Length: 242
Ligand SMILES: C[S@@+](CC[C@H](N)C(=O)[O-])C[C@H]1O[C@@H](n2cnc3c(N)ncnc32)[C@H](O)[C@@H]1O
Ligand SMILES: Nc1nc2[nH]cc(C(=O)O)c2c(=O)[nH]1
Ligand code: SF4
Ligand SMILES: [Mg+2]
Image (cartoon, rainbow, N blue to C red; front, side, top):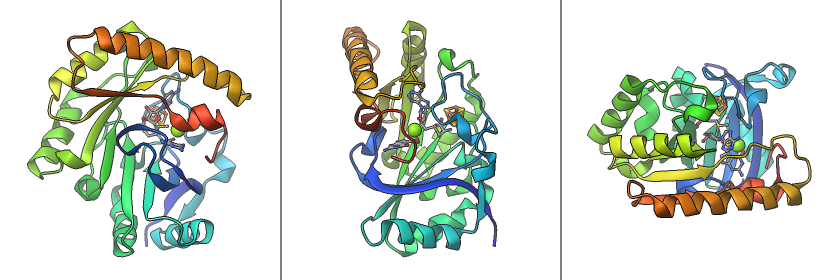
């Protein structure tokens, strides 16, 4: 059995972002990322600060812990990271979850393809805008979108771009124009990752949400889109495991 590097298993909670926002779900957060976004809100998955907490677990061990933590109070699991798309044998976990009639969401940045992408019920691809300081590999992203489309999976796929500034918005317009058939989400960027007071963060993030809404309403290139905050950040701030 393959082992996966796991940092967090928590829930049930609500999916705070994107295509299934509000959905009751458990979370499995894997360690390791091929990016290092300047504003990553989960940098502990790759910057070494939580390396003592990483556990190497088989799919069966992950499933058992999901049941220990969530009991029968869930039918949906979100796999995030880090970049879970680095894990080639993740189909083992996907198969176990589906056997138990559990739906699966997965969050990734679109830097790697895996065959098991077509088995994910809610696949969110989040290419990174200029403010992240990362470079998009368009060839790989094109390939992922084409494969999802050719396998009839576009209804199970979305693109979500996090926005911090006007340059990021231009990037989002470009991405949406390049993949017009893919459900498209714009998400408020949280640049206050040190704030420990949820109320202060919430008021700041709501101002940013209003700014983003105003910008998108003015854009002629962003019509068939959805604009969302990170609901979990509004409610619980920068806390881990929620
Ligand atoms: C931590 S990432 C893990 C999955 C994958 N590495 C990715 O980036 O898509 C989960 C989601 O959080 C978003 N995210 C990360 N840092 C953020 C921030 N400071 N503000 C808003 N969204 C953020 C990412 O864009 C991604 O959609
Ligand atoms: N509630 C909640 N919703 C989320 N949506 C995406 C998350 C992530 O970190 O990938 C996340 C998270 O960490 N918590
Ligand atoms: S790709 Fe995702 S996990 Fe990796 S650094 Fe960027 S936001 Fe963080
Ligand atoms: Mg998060």
